[in-house]
Length: 123
Image (cartoon, rainbow, N blue to C red; front, top):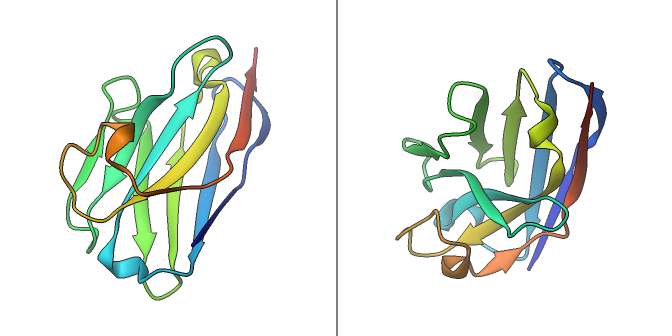
């Protein structure tokens, strides 16, 4: 199984970025997908999650209204659209896949992880 996160970069506050997570080696539509992030010196935190079909989405309060998670099961890819980026959004962003869909805000629930993509927001 491989999850390949991409799309990170250096942007200014207020800008937008779209992260992608390309999955292979698993039946993508059978997995709930999540995005987490980890800033330097901080623990990994939940950002957003999406159900297998894409019908249900979940967000951390800190990103609600600014970030949108989506997926394209035909392309085995999940996305995280990030708008109105803030300095505090700076982190390495990870995508993850979960088979069962319980407590998707908990990183320990996930079965597979991608390698992370760096997002840096400057003032």
